[in-house]
Length: 256
Image (cartoon, rainbow, N blue to C red; front, side, top):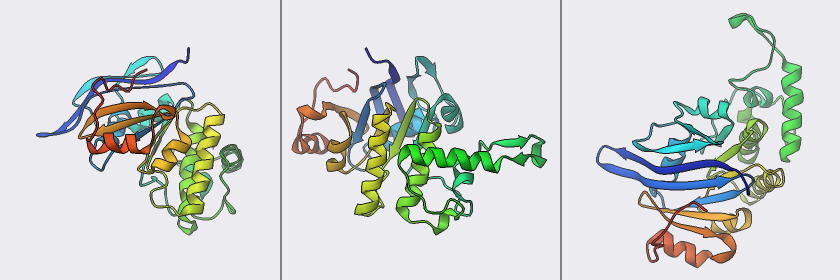
């Protein structure tokens, strides 16, 4: 039986009197790809912010790789093996590709605090390996990020996550601002992650993309998980019915 990588129980987040997330029970296992879908404001991104430590939850419990965790920030989640590609990508526009991949975790030849010497050759080699493994094609690694297309920028952000994520990758709307060709490139990268057995949580409004890429679909509505569906047992109309509230799943749980 596959090992559980991430599990939440009763995960809740209130902003004053606003209940953005209520009693979310969720589970993802090794090698599994799960989509989280729902309208704007349904609680999808709020859920991600709680499990990655971007925000501190109001209530509930989180287990990661078998241990109960309460990350105080995304850096702690990253060190534990959880990587997240947020919608803003969190890239440094004036730095090149290797510098962005190793941002905050630079390789050093000599560690002398503020006078440390970077291992630029080692970082470039690791960057080339990471891009090759994820299928990301960047013509010039020495170009500043600001000179790249949206698809290339997204590819760099995903490659960074895939290079360092030892246990789980979370992608929040990775193709929302991309064209058809760039979207196809990102989807191929996601398929390569699947072939490598890296579990992934994908937040997306694109149901065609969801059905092409994942094993299970978890629907959020008004801060609640309202459905947990196996891809082969549902269709787009069914998912939309849950998103809009036309249909409800009385025993909705994202745990199998």
